[in-house]
Length: 131
Image (cartoon, rainbow, N blue to C red; front, side, top):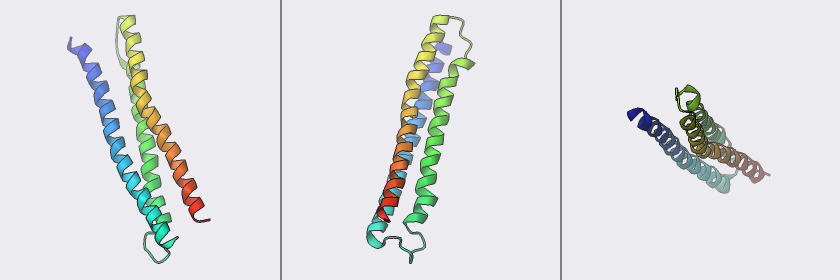
């Protein structure tokens, strides 16, 4: 019985970890984005400041976005690879596990795609704001 309960708990923990980490990344990324565009509105390139909008983008926003995308892709891979590592004799249960893992992996996959689209959008807006 515990073997049957253990896997859903592991899957839920993995999903909770991904969601929790992603929300934290999202808050930080939004704060950096707001700071960048406040600086652009205030002083453009802000050449007189140690960290202007371009520096903040390349040292904060871009690495955070890429790191979050990599994290979400890895979580998705781990969730999708769980059925290959499980020894389940019953083929119906094995198929249910595959379906459950695919459904659960949708959230981190969607998150990775969303952050990639947001990262491209941020780059386009940053470039446009200096033209």
